[in-house]
Length: 286
Ligand code: SF4
Ligand code: SF4
Image (tube, rainbow, N blue to C red; front, side):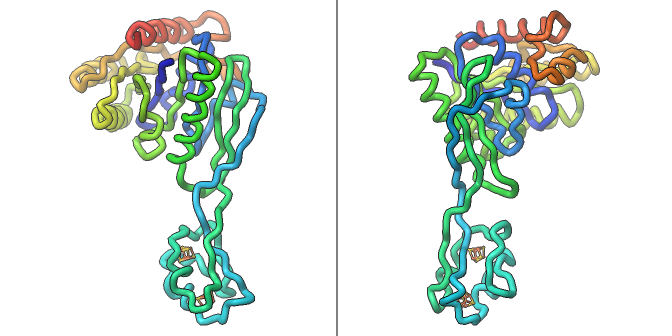
């Protein structure tokens, strides 16, 4: 079993289009959507949820008004302004730091688990999908990514699947790190723009920190061929060879409107480029 993580320096580079194409092309795999803050793989794979589990990522303070004497110490000490005038707690503002709990003279405050979202095991036309939904303003998405990745790995082992295909989050924060840990290889999707080059460098540095093997592909390379050449050269010098280029193609959007990956929607330039890219990844990953 091999784990392949697909990453990008920022959103909107076409990372999920590539991941969805691979999901349709790889016969034996489980897909895991690790972009838990803005999950979108389900929009293409149209999952049927078979199992749902609650995710509790943090804690929030609750004040027992029966015990509270109204001294105001908790309000005074809370750095996040989470204690209201009536000594109730705003669960969105509360960071669960526990300062109010330790300083309340009446032991009137407790930290309780704060519901943060759900994760799911689903069936799709492309095989199993593990995905999640993180509640608004909720944190700890790195922890949720680790949970869905572990579940996907377990499914792959139990069912004898060849690949865990990880659609990672954009950027380089905790969820991206959690999407890389333990992967066999990573594919960075980049776009030919100056900000795209800057974002690529940041992900490439993350791979270097993790001593992670990886390659890159340039999506919509033909909208700026000169910059694409420059990006390919720079990626090579950073030890991340560009192993594919995907042409700009309206067929990608047309397929997504039909909730399909571009490789499921007939012949087109992007369809052919995605197939070639998967062929190269397959050869490289061994
Ligand atoms: S510190 Fe305790 S007793 Fe004082 S206002 Fe807050 S909850 Fe009430
Ligand atoms: S737990 Fe921390 S953030 Fe939450 S109300 Fe208490 S002091 Fe404020």
